[in-house]
Image (cartoon, rainbow, N blue to C red):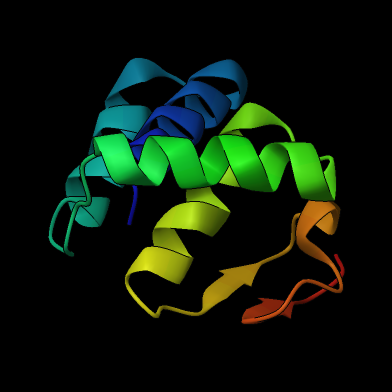
Length: 90
């Protein structure tokens, strides 16, 4: 998962719970493969953001998934309808 996902999850849990819960959540995430934001992924994300009108974080997540041939599993409506995305409404 891209490092920006760690940021987003930590921030969200911190806003609804406490720091201990947020740390526990990202510790579980760290057990998976953490993907750094590379130069090439940054350029791809900027291009995707421009073309698909995605916000910065979403375009980085989408570009990272594309770079690693990964599928995005999400409940984030911003990804609905995009290729290689499994979107589930809440």
